[in-house]
Image 1 (cartoon, rainbow, N blue to C red):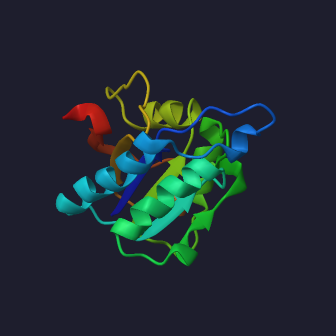
Image 2 (cartoon, helix red, strand yellow):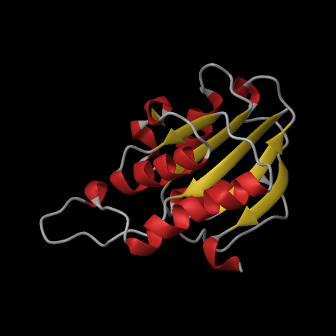
Image 3 (cartoon, rainbow, N blue to C red):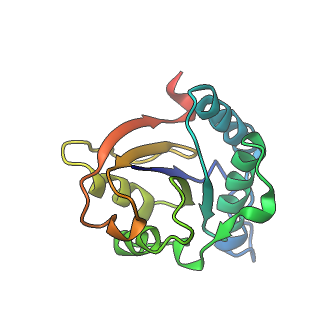
Length: 164
């Protein structure tokens, strides 16, 4: 059995003139929301064995905030270039090719692809748009991530900072 947590990066600053979208940092709300969401997951005893992220600054910083709460060495982050501005098919490919076969994976990326990916996973579970720092979780009855694409996914939860 595997668990996949799909996490949109926390709130970021819009690019300044001359700054690449890739380099946008978290704003103050994002710096607050990321560890708070991680704390909520930890309090709910949600496990994470692997932290996989887009290398874009805002996704990577969100991931590292979760890693700190989960007391995981930041050197263990798995950065995958293809997760920046990924299409749904890219997400499936990345997940299906996860190395070392971890059981509980947190994947950090961007809209619109991450919302589209979440909506592709479970029949009858639709979200309009993943807010910043939202977490969409599914459980998959597989032994190896290579079987992810064709496996049935069970919706577990959808949480986001302004949920209350």
